[in-house]
Length: 292
Image: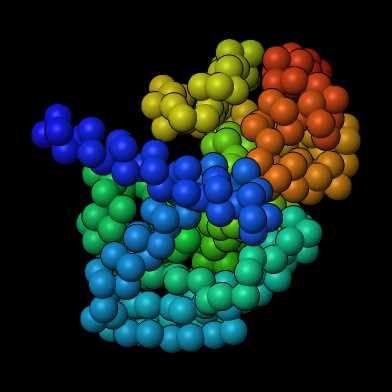
């Protein structure tokens, strides 16, 4: 195993050197090279998802390939129509549209198959997720109240469903080539979702709002934070602060800077003239002022 690991490491280094050399002749930037492993991973996961859902039924629209089982044949049209509507609205808020390619949107009939599709165990609360180029949804039949009449179920799906949120994650991922932090994408996704549908997550108790997490903890360790409500809410309030004080155009500039390969602290310094430590302090003051 040690010899194999050594060979693999040398191979990876050789491949990276090759792409650096090629980039000097082709004009490919550092952002493309630095995110190359993630782009390769996305392609690999896409192939796996296609294989995993090879027996699903398929419905195509202008921007989506919707895959579903027969149990959701009656929902495929509603989901496709809603996805197309929100696609254009998310693009308007972010000032960006992904490359011209159809987005895989997979509907799983129950929580077990939905969670198994991306390896999540035990969490039965999620109804949608964006992961590596595709959007996966839990069937609306699994979480919408069955006693509601059809038209009311449609309204509730459009308002409380995860499509606008997960589409925002996808747009940010494509625009920045995967160069973003978790708290930033969660904050923007909640902001856009609130603007489009009016939906917001539960807020933390006032007594907990002064105990904010360091932004570095809300990146790689976001899901490990003990208070998930606070983690999501803090991410949203950080984006609220940025938009309230600097305007939405600066968010567009920030995403463009990340797309150029700047790391998050560098991008904030370039676009806002502050670092993350100052941002944390300013957001805390912003929340304290709101709480008074």
